[in-house]
Every structure is written in C-alpha cells, then in structure tokens.
Length: 474
Image (cartoon, rainbow, N blue to C red; front, top):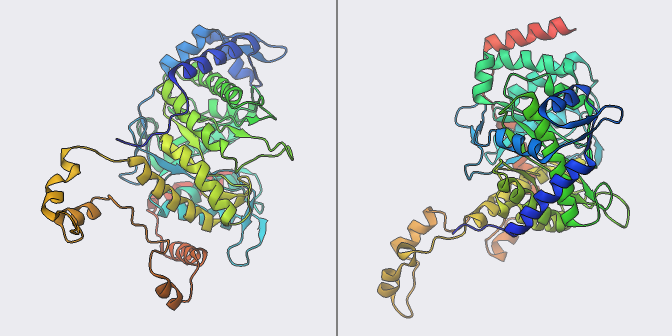
C-alpha cells in the first residue's frame, strides 16, 4: 500500500470543523472589501458594516462547501502539463515572495533583482517536478507601474509554460491580466476551460480579509479562475498557542475566503491552502525549521481531504541562510512529513532564511528531496506476484539474486530510487575525482540548465499583441 501520514483521527477532523464553524458564527471575520461584504450579505452572511465584521451561519459555510468545484485541472500553455486536482497526483509549487538572493557566484546575500526572478522561473520550468509557478522573490530593481507589470507578465509567460498561480494587487492589474490572458490563450472560453492561471489569496491572521487583493480577484470574475486561500497563522503570535487552535484558526480563514469566492462566482474551483506555522518563542519571529511545521502540513492535507477539496500544503522550510547541514535536516524532516500526507500541490522549493532568501542551489536540492519523498510515498505492493516465492525457491539457501531476471525488472520498475546527485561510489573513487561536494555539483547543474533550457515560445501574433498592449499602457 502507499505510505500515507495521518495525524488526525476522524473525530478530530470533525471537531476542528465544528470549532471553525463556531469561530465563523460567533467571532466572524473582518472583511475590508466593501464589494466582498455586499456579496456575502446577499449570500446569507451577517454583515456589520461599521466594523466590517462578517459572521457566517453554518448554513452559509455548508452552502459554499457544496458549491465549490472540487475536481478540475490546472492547465498550462505547454501540452501535457494539465495537473488534475483530487486525482492522486502531486507536484511542487515554487515557494513565494522572498526578498533577497544568495548569489551563487560570491555566496553573499543581497537584494533580489529581476534577473534573479527570471533565472528561478527558468529553473522551475526546466524541472519536471515543479508544476506550478508562484513568484519566488520580489525584484528590488523594478518599479510598480503598468508597463513593468506587463513586461513581467510577458516574460513570465515566455519563460514558464506550466501552470501559473499568481495574484494581482489592484483592479487595474486585474484588467491588464485579463487582456494578457486573452491575447495568449485566445478567448475567455479557453481560459474558463483550461484554467491556465489561478489566484492565491492570503487572509491576514487572525481573521482579516484585506481589500486590495480581494477586490483585484473579484475583478477577474467571469473567467472561472481557480482560487487558493492561504492564510499564514503563526502559532503563539497571530494564532493561539496550540497546534489544534492554529489549525482551527487557519481553517476558519480558509472557509471565510471560500464563502467570498462562491458568492462572487458560484461553482468556481477552490484550493484548500493554509500555510500553518509556528512563532519562535525565543525571538517572536517565524520558526521556519520547526518539525511541527511538518505536522501542520499534514493537517492541512487532511482537512482539505475532509472537505473533498484539492489541497496545496506547505513543507520543507528552514531558518538557515545557506544550503547547509541545518537546512538539509530541517527541510528534509518537516518536508517529508508534509509529502507523506500527499497533497495535490506542495509548496516549498527555493527559499531559505524563513522563506526570505532565494537560493537556486537549494531549489535544485529541494526538488531532489521531493523525488526521494515521492518514492517513499509510493510504499510497496504486497501480493502473490511481488513475493517472488518461485525466485526464492530457485535460488535457494546460500544463493544470490543479482543475476535473476526479476532483479533487473525490479530495477527498471523503480523498486530502487536511483538518483544521480548524491555519491554512492566507493571512497577511493570519490577521492580520485577530487572529493567533489554536492553543492559544487548542484551549482554546475543549475548553470547548465540556465544556459541551455529553451521554453516553448509564444506565437508571433501574441508577441505583437503584447507589444501593442505595452505601448498603449505607457
């Protein structure tokens, strides 16, 4: 059977759900968007306009849960890269919103540039285990204006041909995004059918849904844009000081966002995506390498499955600033726990230092760890065919199975995970090759990918229309 990590008993999932319903009905959520409050009022929620607090009766939440589309695909420009939700598959999503970069040439941390963002995008596009884009870092050398936003969208669509999950922050950006998507994909009908783009909205913990990103998302209504809700409650700071209470708070915030999405566009596809985490009680900061983050990642998956919603769970984080023993232990431990819960999408590769520092070497290492975790998740199949009793009888006591056909077949069938990054040769061979380090090898591989990878180009017609749109925006 497949290896699956289970943290919650069925009755505990029921209890988290019921506690969340009580929070939503009694305490409510502050919704800063007047447009969203109007939609929720019409949907049956109780709106207190002076404070912006919205309370959600049980029936309203259950109605939204029943309306959300749960089985759909996240499409892509590249053929063959449609990621089916709730179908047992799992791929990586690039971690998001870092601010600095560990320069692989001088090993110094500096503010991220637009070039850093482009290199990470190309690397993610080249690695098959990465199926979803999220802007992994912000470029300090770029201004926020319509022209630069359009350049970003054009370069993103040129360099990343799989699924893109990216919010916009203003209604103006939403309008420009609509135009870009229609240029690249041809029609609103194609966008609605293929779902090549999805939104990620992050309610502010505790219990606040902000205005700008929500209004920008609402401005995209009519395109059936899938939406993931990713509150980031921090246990002990922006969430109460227990794992269970943090799960309840994050779950409440996701359900509140779900109600807005369904009130705005009934049946719109929805992704359960809380990023539950811990405060470091020694500093008050984000304890990104905590083993408990892996437990919370598994809880995220289990609660999403409880609602039969697709899940994007977070895992594989570290507080250290470079690829190191600390980052390997922390990311390997908490990342494996999340991976073994097997969400539809797993967020995490590429950022260090509490998800603030981009490292392309770490990005590549994270993908390799995911490959290993994927093999661990496959478990084993125990049946009459796999017991190989006839082979045991044929070889007999004291024999050897190396030359057996079944051994060759098992190697080709993936019974071993045979990665090519970490050394498995003898000590003498390693010494004869100059004692190479894993980090040196990773850096060389990253450089080769960046020098050679060719993304699927946009059509000439799309390039011309995008250029014309940028000219009109100046």
